[in-house]
Image (cartoon, rainbow, N blue to C red; front, side, top):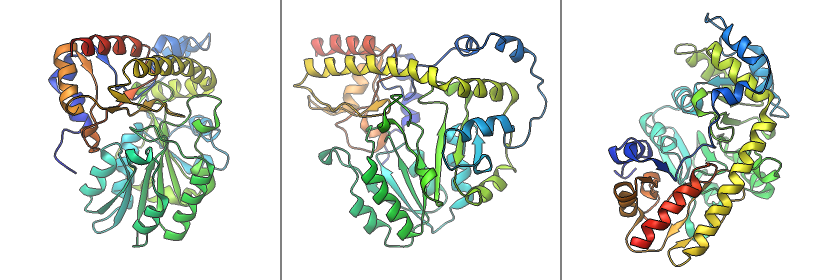
Length: 370
């Protein structure tokens, strides 16, 4: 990767830490613990009665059953809960990738998708989605990239940061390529599920092929990033066996308080996703209005699913400089595309936060001064 600040470094920078509005948040509006416990009348009493003892390794059966109901063909023993998808990624690359393996990564992407296989000594080939193609990845290019022996293909749908979501024809062809290549598809689906009720908000690759590992969790669409509950899902449990073995050497437990709150969230997932869909709809309307008012400075297409979009800045300079000015002059976080190693003309917008209209209003004021 080029030596630009990573996304994590950007968010940890002094300017970002001092900002009070975040236009680039990746997760839906977080719930409070009180909001989550209010879904059931006896939840507070049960939560306070939890024994802080060792739980069952690799999660309690109730949690595995609750997650498996989100899939059609993934059994409970085809699930491996982790401390967020970050741990899923770490365990996956540690278990399945060795020096010299070839890994194909859809880009732009969450930076660890590139950094982790590089850390393992893998040969990393980028499957680039391009702005001039409306961020639609070229499947013929993927065929060429996987003509050479390939260990893993890494995708994210809806894509972070662009918001691209494939249709059925795209997914069917993607799985044909997986079958022909002999690779394992790692389908990061952490942003799938919003808006609720829309087919384009769903992703089911793990249900459809024995060489797919899906990554998902409660952070992005459910608005519960503080629970740090993610999981890997595979139709064939044998695919997760080496990862399960490695994870046993580290932390193989879901803490009892997290287990309780995660089960509660899964039981009321429809209501939570309805709430987050309403917030997302408000954010989309605010973003569409903002982009229309400033059509001379931005190019933007509303995403079909997920909570992220990746507008193009057509004003003076690049988005790295724009982002720094927004931090220092407006205390407003705007993650530039250099954080994703995706040029210097785009920036990420998180659409499912209640504060987005306020952030856009502050951006308005900045543009008036500019």
